[in-house]
Image (cartoon, rainbow, N blue to C red; front, side, top):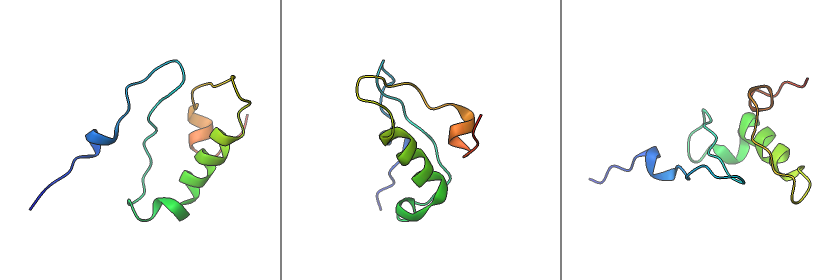
Length: 63
């Protein structure tokens, strides 16, 4: 039996990328509210103006 680690999914952080940890199963990510909030937040950024996700955005809080 093969065991795969979540560590293999982590991208090296750069000026335009980061890995974001979420509490969702692999199959559940497509409908998990926290994941959907993060995806919407990332897609809403203007092209060329990437910034890291902050804690309040990760938790779905504003301000």
